[in-house]
Amino acid sequence: MAQTPKPADPAVPRLGKPLKRSFFDRSVHEVAPDLIGATLLVDGVGGLIVEVEAYHHLDPAAHSFRGPTSRNRVMFGPAGFAYVYRSYGIHWCVNFVCEEEGSASAVLIRALQPTHGLAAMRRRRGLQDERALCSGPGKLCEALGITIKHNELPLDQPPLALHARTARPETIVGVRIGITKAIDLPWRYGWKGSRYLSKPF
DNA sequence: CGACAGATTCCCT
DNA sequence: GGGAATCTGTCGA
Image (cartoon, rainbow, N blue to C red; front, side, top):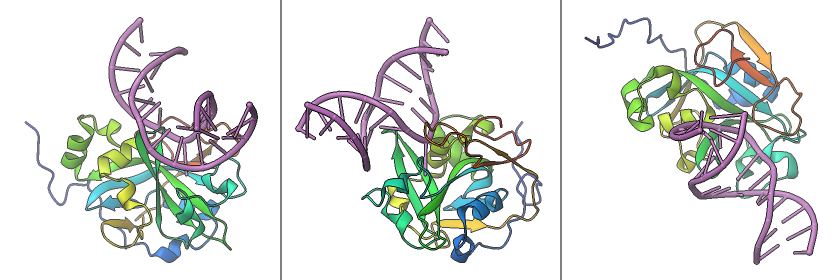
């Protein structure tokens, strides 16, 4: 018999204070590791960020590398907004735009540990396994209902919400996944030992 | 303008 | 491990 989680259930950790857009007004290489352990919610559904990747405008693997297009233009605007794009024609992926002197950089959110709205995530994903709900950039967008409608939305206003971590997790660094350019840059960050990563480090 | 690669995922073998 | 699904930007004819 499955138990209904109670408010005091430690599996649903207390949320930290809301992150302001100014959190993203600095180098993507500082923001990316600082996001590990923060909580991302969309209409109250989401979880702990356990894996991200940094993309910088001087980085050939970044969408912003060749300049603004209709797809990536939000990357060239102010920090603290969502950049959502279609991946392989099928999936959505979400980034958080950072800015350091017009750097056109962003952090790709690659995996979450589900904590809020598990039932909604299971319904959207069509599966039960908690570890499979948000263990990839396309998976987590499906689980949270993120689509192009969320592109260019501010990260500190509904339906989006970000909460600071309440403790600093041990993080691990590695090379990015699924790219063919600049494959050696160690710009993937993860929560060390997490069971919810897209792939092991 | 056509071809093709790509910050992916799922299902099959 | 391999292939399909099929949107967006880039490059070559």
